[in-house]
Length: 142
Image 1: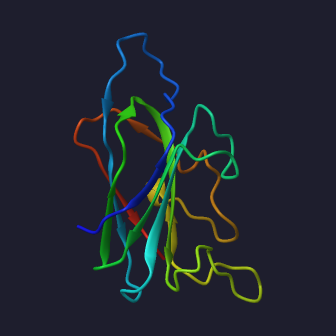
Image 2: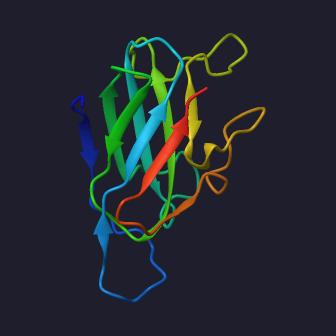
Image 3: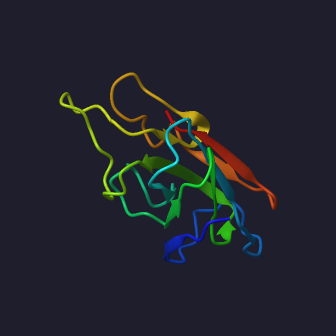
């Protein structure tokens, strides 16, 4: 597995339980049909703190592409609600390239495989509940 550059600020996600905090990693698999170049960029948002995609990222990673499935394992997470935004940075220029009409020119995806015809889905549409010790989230990049 390729090494990932990881930037993480330990922030506890909003919880509905007063129980002792529980933490486990989440494995994210980004599936792409694009060329095996560049890197996949992952961004994990804590839904208790983030109301939109522009809010601060809880954890992020840059993983070089070596196959059609690129894997990132998050730092241990508390039980809570999260959302993921992922894109395949084909040319490794660190931005999601867009075409002349402003549509993404590189494969991208969100948790729950949420998608809108125009523009990104709302962060609410991509929100998922994290409760499992062995959770795997698959995100289809298109």
